[in-house]
Length: 450
Image 1 (cartoon, rainbow, N blue to C red):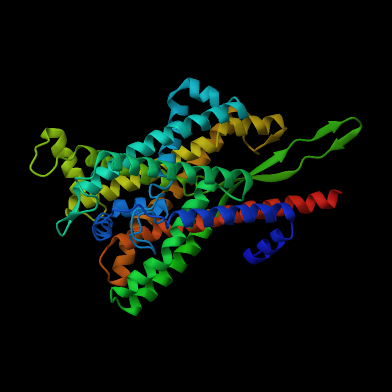
Image 2: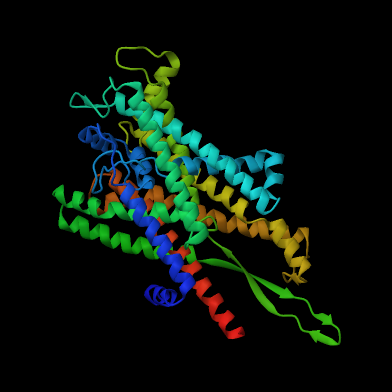
């Protein structure tokens, strides 16, 4: 079933039509909020800051053009922080399930335990949003362009506090939108909002690219590379390792049910685009540290201030130093691979899968049920996860450099964001379409049974 056919069929089902309209409506409200800017901001200095720092450009990618550096709006919008604090809070809570026995037990308490963990993540999101908003105000006061800062250093504290409250409130609102989409709409709400933010920046990015006077051939090459990369992403996202399984012969009453052969599909990229989102959030922590502790002009900050100032000036995917640039790319690549294995371990438990197979009298030919099956599944999953992790790292780190080489353009923030943006948009679109097709199929079976 193609995309338009699935959407047409979904609009014919009242329940799915309602889900689609809720999702589209919340996305429209989110984009409207992204156009409401905070007054008193030097937009020229703001644009220069984000053009000079690729990491902030990546952060802006997930905030939904909240900072308006390449989109249709110039300024700091009320949802400028995006879902970054919520993503960071989710990372912390998932790490706590690994290091804390109490949190791990809470996660296994069913709906009640998940509700409590979600509530804790919300509280943590508010705290992180306030911290990040304060860090941005410090950065905007310290960064100058042509002798002017983004926010005036003489801005009174009540105004600074008001900006922090507004940015925090914007994060809480779109976090709520994401939960509403997940519960009442279609797809994963957080991923849908991030994708909507990326797509919202496409027109402005294309216009900005054409206004720079670059050749039409380079633009054509970017389009060709985008199509090829999208096809490769679809191929890997859909790829599965099929484990053959066999159900045992069963006797129920006087009837004998013969065993059946089937397969257990294991996705090559089980984690989807979540590792990239997690890695970007972690990569931003040094920048936040630099914004807090970097000494102001004419003041010495000691050892901590020196380290913070170095991070502030050099922590950038295309920074002034080749050595720092290489170390940055390696660290980013390693983070993506690490989070791929981590999130796969969270979403796929070989022990639980082996127990479920054993309870249903299903086994893998040649493998003993129980611990041997769990060990076999863990080994297979580890191998295909390695392939998926390398793929994610290549798309997000190696692809921008390769694109720059093929097009003859120097590496830039726009190139750096390209592979990540394509991966997120294609991955989220595939997952959403799978969910839509699954719900359509369920309703077809339900109608057949009736």
